[in-house]
Image 1 (cartoon, rainbow, N blue to C red):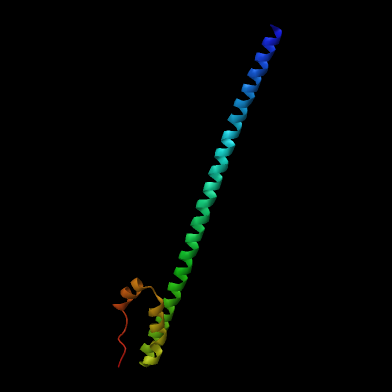
Image 2 (image 1 turned 180 degrees about the vertical axis):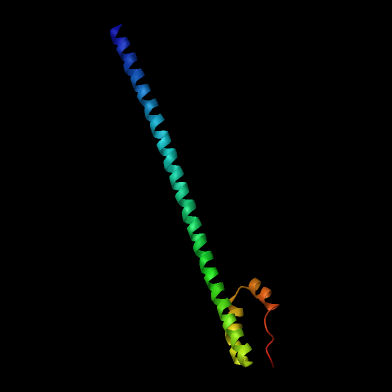
Length: 109
């Protein structure tokens, strides 16, 4: 009878140990998954932000080139000074070019 009681006790100890192990491991796995998912979201956000920053910088450069061309043309009225303007308009996206077409100066013939 003592042996049966001891066997039951060992078996209960093993079950308890498995439960405790599961209770401890499960949160660790869930937290690790959450950390990895958060890192992936952060990496994706950084990649998107970087590409948008590059596009913004290119747009700013094109706008500065347009301004340089316009300023040179307005001061001298020589069409050769419109070259930076025309290059910048070609570099910009078609959507931005459509917006600026309403404001672009007419090139004298």
